[in-house]
Length: 166
Image (cartoon, rainbow, N blue to C red; front, side, top):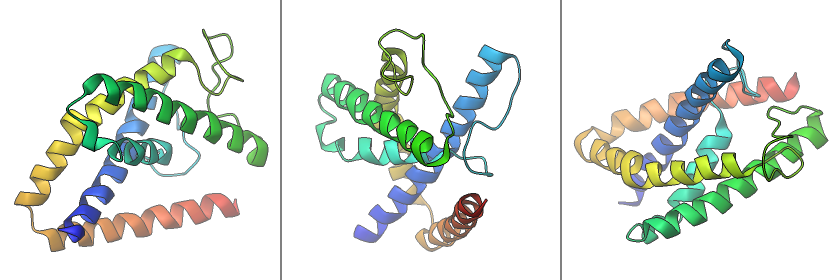
C-alpha cells in the first residue's frame, strides 16, 4: 500500500506541474495575447504547482470539510507562492510573476486573487484530480507506472540540473 502511495504522489506531482504549466500558458495568452514559457525550467512543467499539490494532499484527511480545504489551500499555497517568488528574486534576480497593482498583494509575489485561485485549485485537487489518480493506480499496472515515473524523474532532474548550471 505504501508503494502505491509513492506512485500516487509521483503522478500527482508531475501531473499538477504540467497542468500548472498549461494553466499559466492559458493565462498568458488571455492577458498578453501570446504564449511563452512562464517557467524557470526548460520543460513543460512548473514544479511550484506540483509542490503545492503535495502540500494540499497533506490535508486530504479533511476532505469532508470543503470549506476547510479551501481555506487551508488558500493559505498554504499562498505562502508557498510568496516564498518561492521571494527566493527566485533573491537568488536569481528573476521575477516570474508580479502582482504589483493587484488588490491585497504582498511584495508583488502573492495577491488575493492568486491565493483564491489556488484555494479553488486545492478543492479541484482534493475532489477531482487525486480521486482520479487513485482509480488509475488501482486499475493500471503499478510496475509500468513506476517505470514511467522513473523516466519522468530522470528528465525532470536533468532539466533541473541544466537550469541550475545555466
